Length: 394
Ligand code: SF4
Image 1 (tube, rainbow, N blue to C red):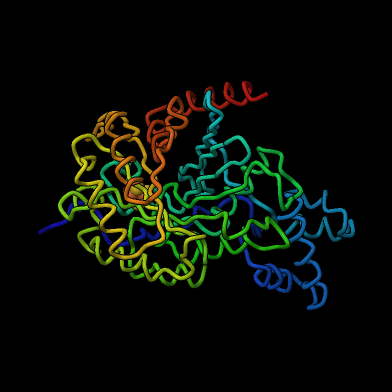
Image 2 (cartoon, protein in one colour; image 1 turned 120 degrees about the vertical axis):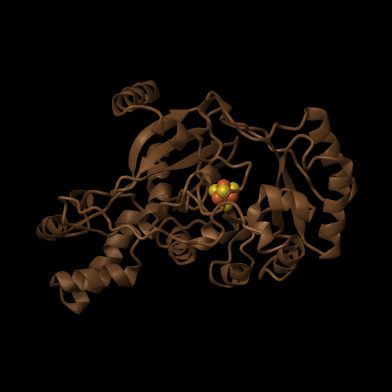
């Protein structure tokens, strides 16, 4: 049977639009790649190594984007660097702040593609939801991003750039090991991170690097819709927490909601979770479960969820997510009573199943909504909106 949508990763190769700025953006390069770029620009081996170390510290510990502010580098060297290199950030199209404190950014790559990131603050911590692709190949039916074609993978610089931009906005430089608002990262924005594996891995290695941003792997979660063949590699090479967009417990319903299920079925997926390196009771696998009225929210579904998790002996918790509909969405959200009942059954089965409070509804914080809304606005409307929002932010 033909499967609707694009199931396999088919990144559309698009040449980067040449910018007038010929300088090399070093954000997102590994230390070795920065050193190589400096060597190529004419520094000798010893100088290149030292400069790469200084630049790394300045970029990722101090948050510097201006070479002139890098006081540990001699002045003539700063000018030399500024002529040849830059430290970029994604371009901000719109920044919105919800009444509940959730912040959402519509960002643009240098070659003109929009993508999103969201920051969700809590009392003593905050989580940044980071995108890995522009659009997505997987047409999950409850997800607005799933209605958009994949344009391209984000580069390591564009992925780590989201973290940098959020910390700029939160005023969280220099890096502190504790007590910061941006305390957690979830790779749960636009795109399927395991279909952009190398770039996500390289970006997260920078985020975890102790000489820079220094976020512990325990505070980072990678969310997949179930790209089974890549899961073990993700555990071995990245080693962060795993979240799985499960959303249904029968083949029929999951085939509809998460079409990737037709390729990698539920049992295969749960076996891959059981084999995920490093998962244990202290580092449980999170199963995301969006609550859709009369679709996946019955008592039987809840009992089957418990049975499956127990069958595979998974150290697991379940996040129940009330569906955040958009205009024309094919589903409705389950009632509060239904969500509570579902949660109770899973809890009674011995598995934690908290209900996630919807955040940022007034700013369309669900994945893909801002990009889609922006595409319906004219350039002038967008500029005006951006000005208003920034003015409101002070
Ligand atoms: S839920 Fe994730 S994987 Fe599925 S369509 Fe949306 S962005 Fe893609």
